[in-house]
Picture: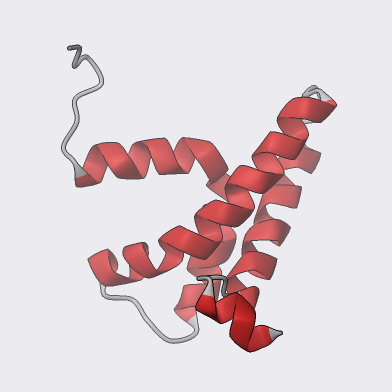
Length: 97
């Protein structure tokens, strides 16, 4: 099973760290409704799984720090993805087409 998950790009350790981070975020935002809470958990978990290696590559951090980064990415979730993409692609907040 582990090999299959790794084959489709899922790192169990990153998923669990991201899930924990996203659950902390959701528990801190008690005013959110169920739909936005679920979306936040999913976004945080997938962010941790798929972006941890990107952040590791950009920052040069590696080893056990990867799990901490996965937790942080899970915690910041979708907002973190937006900010990271703006930083990587040098997008201005006031940019419009």
